[in-house]
Length: 181
Image (tube, rainbow, N blue to C red; front, side, top):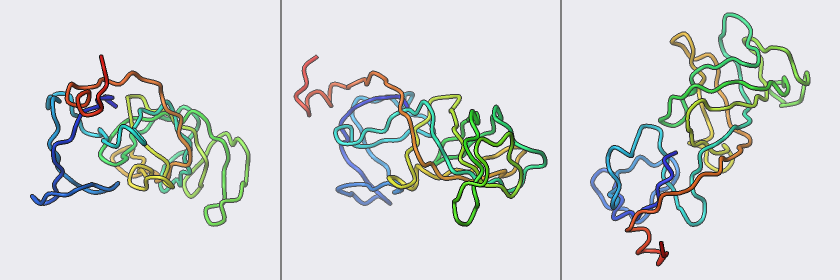
């Protein structure tokens, strides 16, 4: 979410140097000209040339309600635990109620969903958040919905809409790519 582009000096896992890290790998890396204050929990790094991680305006997900005492309507805003991020996301639109096993539509635009239901829901993060579709990047595409200190639902992301945002390029990244100011 901070949209910083820089050069990675080294990548390591368990104090052993790696040539590359794949989605889901838990690694440490040394980067040039980025302050520790710029890095926060839930930030995602990636290849800035081919597929940069971007902040999402909203995303569509298939959600299975596990255990919620009442019913869930559009406007519900629980905390989503996705990769290392813990961010409140608003359920803006309940698109359809679906069968958990087959994925077939049971009801289009339901008024509410309750425990045991599966649904396709459009969600809007309340703070900057980077997620991806489960199909492209599984670790960034699955989440748990938490409320009242328990897991209320789980889901996978089917589609995302990115926010357009200017990227801050460090001097190290400019030298590496040969970009002018």
